[in-house]
View (cartoon, rainbow, N blue to C red):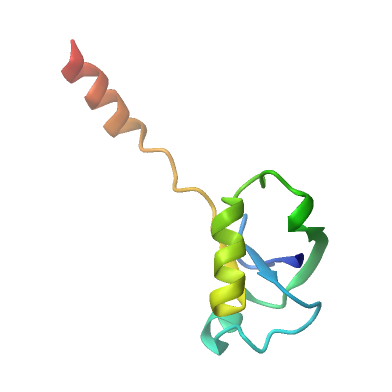
Length: 91
């Protein structure tokens, strides 16, 4: 299963996975407007991968089959204050 990966020029660490190069027909228009003009990153064969850097491989495959695209968002920011409070509560 080949997938084409694009990055967003507007949203850091945001990627869009598609079946075919430059075929954005399955992506909702509001998402594309927010995403910005997609910039091609790479083409991957998901069948030959065991994992992906920023996404769960099986979830990507499932979403590509079900909706025709997968949107990878950046990880949530660390909440250092909450971590510190949890650490204090353990003592």
